[in-house]
Image (cartoon, rainbow, N blue to C red; front, side, top):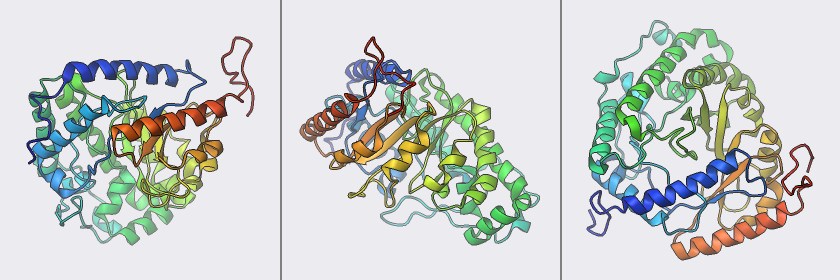
Length: 385
């Protein structure tokens, strides 16, 4: 491990928390509609959080996270890197059912399906989280984070995969998609048992995190006043609307209702399922990529018009990943009744963050200057663009 990396003992807690409080205030005021003329631009230091070297080494992962949180204090940005995360691969819930973790070089830990048919899961019961080594590792990391940082930094839940994502890791993928789309009743028990495990283990994590809990978590914008949990729902990028309606929506809805809110992250182009996604109760935030030319943040990003037209007028906080070189996309994305915040990717240094931040803010000012306003100067939410 590099001696140059910051440690829990040398982290600038007071400075970080002071800056974070100030920027949290800005983000909260914007989310509450008190800054209608503004669009937050958030820039984090770039690093690869999702590979084996970091995932397997809890000390290295913590120190790299702290390094970037400390650097973010000096970067031009409306928001901060929000929390420590006990990230331990996307197959965590699949592993609890017995799927083995594979640590292939240069990749995040993976799991492989263990069920060949729906018949094998017809009588399945919820596994004991205490018997799962990966789940125990997540809980151990949470407690260790708290000990190392003396409860001074926010901590979120691990990367919670949606029930559909997890089921597709457990059952032979083609079989699962076929049955869950056309005979969903055959996997209904299976899906609900996965939901039961997500709820149970999420509550165990929340208890372990205690006063440091950051919600909704993972890659979302977070605030002490917000509720709900973050769920990664990547399968919605390629499922048909019919398949999403019967295989995703009911189970995401159970999670949303239980935790009083849900924030959905998806990689890929999800335009065809956005209308169904909006039927999720207590949907508070969505996160996906919008790019046209540069695809560093997503291999198959959404078109800006699809995001704009699907979410405008809903009041849902829309976090959009966008490359630093695609400021022109804002003309096709932003609208007065779209609660959109930008996470700008590809920025390498503090100096570059200042240039990119100014460039995006200037374009935002030019766009919002044409938005209709009430006599007092604030935006008129009843006017159309």
